[in-house]
Length: 136
Image (cartoon, rainbow, N blue to C red; front, side, top):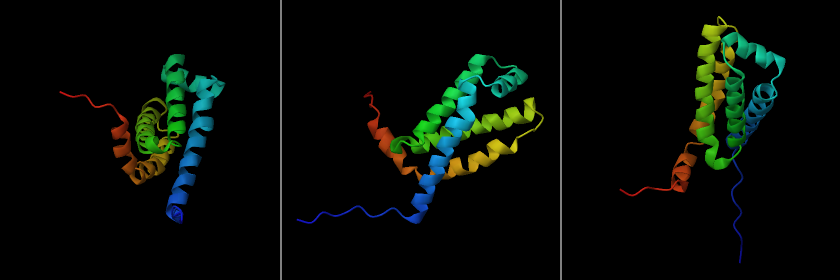
């Protein structure tokens, strides 16, 4: 009896996985962590926006959840979409509260997030199958 080995992932899929890991590390450590530990730079930014510390912790928690979800196969596409939406909001905040300072950063991050969301879109059907269905 012979076992059939799964085919090795293509180079493009390996690169995509590396992109996901880099994004997850960025969101967990460079973006979420300063908010969650109330680093002075994060506190100053949220004060400048007129947002409370609850807003800072909420955004940090959302970023950390997105970072973790980028590494869970069934959640990858949804996580990338959610983080992309968060970055769209960050772009608007950068334009309005910070006069465009660093506005390019969220736009740059949206590009690989959109790539991950599109490339992993087949996982969305799998995710929907896991949700309980209500009968009318």
